Amino acid sequence: MRMLLRGAAALAAVVTVASLTSGAAAQSRPDEGAGTVRAAAAQIPPGVTAGVAVYDRRDGTFTEQVNESAQFRSASVVKLLLALDFLWNRGPDYVIPAADRALLEPMLRSSYDDAADHYWSTYGGSAIIDRMASPERLDLRDTEGPPAGYPGYWGYTAISARDTVTIYRYILEKAPAPVRTFIMDNLRASTRCASDKFDQHFGIAGAFDRPWAVKQGWSGKFAEGTCGPQGAAGTVAKTAGEAAPRAAADVDLTRPALHSTGTVGADDRSIVAVLTTHPVGTSYGKAYTDIGRLTRSLNVPGAARPAGTWFGTWGEFVNVRKGPSTGDARITQLPAGVEVLVSCQVRGQVVTVPPYTNEWWAYLPQYKGFISNIYISSPDNRLPNVPECVS
Image 1 (cartoon, rainbow, N blue to C red):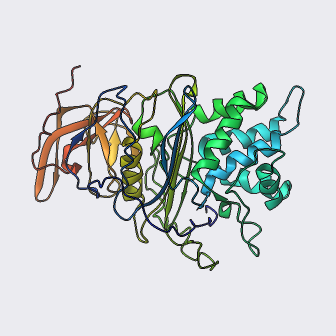
Image 2 (image 1 turned 180 degrees about the vertical axis):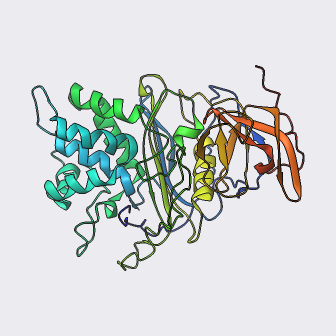
């Protein structure tokens, strides 16, 4: 079970630059074409608290800053600091022992919690955060270890959007080349399914075409992950965060958190940090959708946006299949109620979910598979303004 993670500091005000329709039943909304450049316009969905920073490395400027110094519980974003601390001063060749490579690679690619447990307990716990935040290393302004009394809770580490940018700038601009290559190559190889079966390709990974590199984080009372061809078979309820310990009044440990951090564009042009918390009771699919909408609204220089139209979905355990038939192999199952990108549609097997019947199937390019249109929130069987797939 994912470790309980530290909550965001209370904010004086929640900044909403422009509101978005929220909820899985939202109708289709085409995004701008690839490479579109827009003015700063972070759109924070209702009820979401966010800290946002986008830094253009080519121009040396921020294109987005919203509550950038606000502290959020880091969730698995802290794994960047665990990896950096382990690699610190291991030169001149920075050879990583095979046993550590077997832990570090899945920790960075698939958010493997057991690896984080190992490095946290082996190398000093909160002392890792003190070392990495110090002026002698990264000089982080808002990052601090878990509160007293919770030494094992690495995810309680506090972090901000601006400190996240600083971490990535160090990796890209100051770290020894072997360290930079190891970390960034693993973040570029991020797996859709995390080690705990949560679909982790939200935010940056869903909003932009490659090249990108991501380290994500999530914490909350969510149903068990269903990512992968095995889907929901044999899963049990996941309640990370349900019994979060009480902390100081200004630290929120109860709201579900979803964070998307990383780089976007050729030569890692833009560093993006989107840290969010959501109302208690928010489902994983709803939080996934909201952070996706927020991330897509950002001005990210060098980003290419995927072609297609975004639609809401309904239902639990919706299968994504290799072809437009229930007989085709299952690729994965969608988080319940998540928003998906559709590039085209095709007639396939008739699917009936009383009182509805539908023969159309939507192709999801980011999953490389199909779902029945019956599970897409649209008034008609055939989706509007979506072309038929060409064989």
